[in-house]
Image (tube, rainbow, N blue to C red; front, top):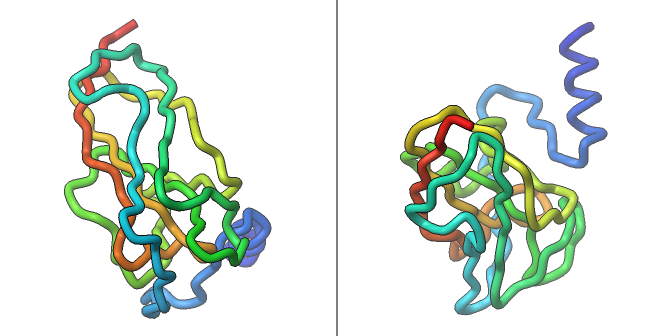
Length: 145
């Protein structure tokens, strides 16, 4: 019963729900030529407090909420301390922070130390575009407040 409630709750959040443990490959939406995601702030190498704002940027494409099927649009996903990109032919999983409402900024709280941040754009189904639209990975240092 708890599993059914969790699946129902996830479905209401606007993201696709995978019925099996193994995600199936999905077709990838085409990205606009030259499109690029980037992190406006913080800057690479910046020292920030434990709670800080991350602002997202995107050129060459538009931002749209998950579920909206408009060519050359997508929504941001934030990768924190990830060494590898998520699987490209599948919806991005729970280890990626989803901004399916079309948000262009967020507030993050991290433990003190060095961390990496990277953005990747997902289509209406949270699947990365073809070719992938992503930011450069930046490194920040979080200081204890």
